[in-house]
Image (spheres, rainbow, N blue to C red):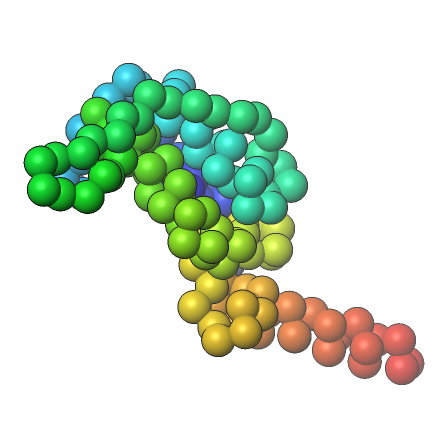
Length: 144
Ligand SMILES: [Zn+2]
């Protein structure tokens, strides 16, 4: 979900070599190509609240039941692995913890580990403080 960086205006999926390197760094196979990855990324981002993403996506994932083992989702590539991981979060009731930072120049996807699931910003040190400073400037400006 964070292969696009709105602040730096970069997108791993714009560069096929960067996409292959990104997947390889995580021990994954890049698979079908950037177009599928882009639509799945957009669908995941909209599913967790990114107002600027808008699409749906599906990729083939199989259920494997090894002898004596437990059923598990198996994906042929990184895009399927990401959607399988997202499905696991949903099954575990943790999907709502995946959020998009509301700062327009950030929109980083993050997992809210706070006890009461109330985290808003990707980072209080960066986006949270920036918002506090902006709100403070507006308050003091209106006092003039
Ligand atoms: Zn942020």
